[in-house]
Image (cartoon, rainbow, N blue to C red; front, side, top):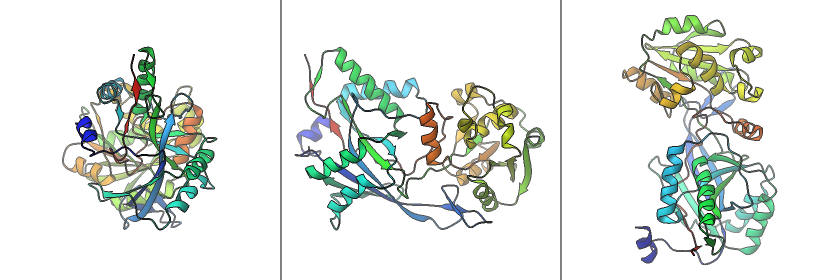
Length: 383
């Protein structure tokens, strides 16, 4: 089908090299700390959704020269599937999502000046109502300005770890077979959407955990065991639970248990005891992640859900929202839901800088990049 689309010009090759500005406009609910009024993105839905905009620059990343820091481990199965797709299509149909630090916004400002007042070259909405807009900028001086701004910066993988590693594997495979790139658009490059963490729409949603299929699970027994290290209090509603999480964001470590129709907050009593609670030679920054504390100080010691159980995917389901997690428990599809604050963007970069991996499902950058928005056919010379 890809070859048919190219032949019938459903997909058209751009005539000149350039960069793209990719703008996503979406709405995301935020929670408010009842004591300070501060708003915490992505923790719930009790307030009217806030309109946000996230901008990214779409460009090619040279795999032979550039490196991007990961924050999560990859699995063999997804990489094998993507490698088969590369072999069959010799094309990139999706992008990796990269982050960078640019407080002065040099790269995006250079592009915004060129497109000011200009309608997007493409505009659409996804199934969730999020707007996706694209501008093509082939101006050589603008491209050079973007390159100058981005080349010195560290790049971090937000989403697309499997695609990135598979692209590297496919490049090595092509080189081993004596293949050569016929230009920059080949197996030595990967398309990427690069987003400045200073963008107001660069946010992460939390990923609630729903526990199921545990033999003889008892909320009371669990709480009795957990309250040695966590202060346990009854919470009246989901709205109140969101307030508890928002109040703790960035200042402490709080979690919400929902089971048997009731909410309970679990607040870590003493962060200084994390070294005792979380064994192993891990950096302090990793131990302080809320998602780490949930997995290593709550799920593993009190419910027996360790890394091996998580890998088997037998007792934990990941929900997209707090409402979904609660609904799964109410519907009898889960025994308990654990709600938590989202990982902060700066925490992702900090962990990547340390060269360690976060626990599974630590980040949910929202919204996702639109698949097929800009594709790249690889130009390859074969022996």
